[in-house]
Length: 209
Image (cartoon, rainbow, N blue to C red; front, side, top):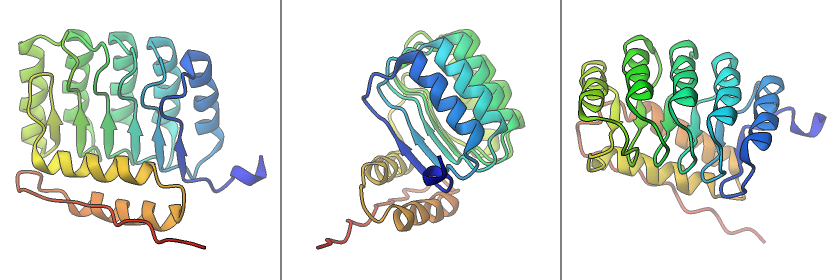
C-alpha cells in the first residue's frame, strides 16, 4: 500500500469495474489524500457505485477532477454527487456526460452550484431525461456563479471543449505524469472566464529512451 501513498492520478476508463469496483475506488479515496484526478469514464457504474464515490469525494482533501462520463448514474447517485459538490473544497471539474440524470438530479445540481466555492466546470450533456425546466435552472445558477455548464441540448462552448480536450489528453499520458498534472492544474486555475474563447492544449509528452 505504501507504493500508492502519494498517487495523484487514477485512470481506469473503460474497464467495466461496475458498482463493486466503484466501492473499491471509494475506499481508495478514503485512504489516499493525495489523489487529484480520477477518471472512471465508461465503467458501467450505476447509482449504487456513484453513491459510494460521492460520499468519498465529499470528504476528500485534494481531488480536483472527477470524470464519471458514460456510465449509468440516475437521480439517486446524482443527488449524492451534487451533495459532494456542496461539501468539497477542492473539486473544480465534474464530467457526468451520457448518464441517466433526470429532473431530481439536475435540480440537486442547481442547488449545489449555489453553494459550491470551487467548482468551475460541470458537464451534464447527453443526459436526455433532464427536462427543460431543470436544465434552465442549472444553467441560470451556473451563469450567475461563473461556472461553465454544458446541458443536454447545449453545444459545448469552446472554452469547455478546450478544457475537456486537455483533461482527456492528460489523463491518457503514461509518462511524466506529475509534470502534466501540474500543467493542467495551472490551466484549470487560469481558465476562470469561460465566456472567452479560451484554447487550452496539453503539451505533447517528451520522448524518453
